[in-house]
Image 1 (cartoon, rainbow, N blue to C red):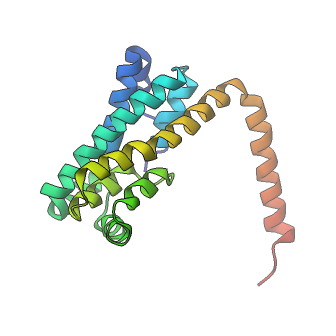
Image 2: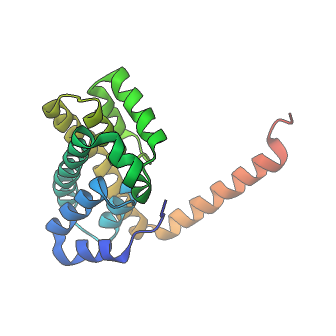
Length: 188
């Protein structure tokens, strides 16, 4: 998976503001294989207002999730097998998300939105495939994405404002981890 934000996404947010944030999150949540964490943190880092990131990001992400749900509901597994590799969604990932959705019902959507690193689209497609009720899916998607948007936008803004502090703390964590691995880790 790509770990850098395509410059076109940053430019979209810079040039179009709220609409750019909405569009970036819609695309990320539905088709573009980039981590949402990068989109949101970049929006905070480039100075978009926090309320814009949360409101327009939540709307874009929810509508993108709705598209994923419809893909799962109406195309489902055959589409994933054929095209999923292009957006880093494998049949195995969908099977795990599907099992999770079957076990926890609509709560799986809320939980899936709160878990970092797992692409929104995986849970959205799985929710459509197992035919979770649409309105609760939309509500849980919207509720679940708001805390993530808020915290990651604050992180992006802080990263720019306090870059030196983040570098010092990051370097200290690397040193602590290295010392632990070399000297303090229990021998097996």
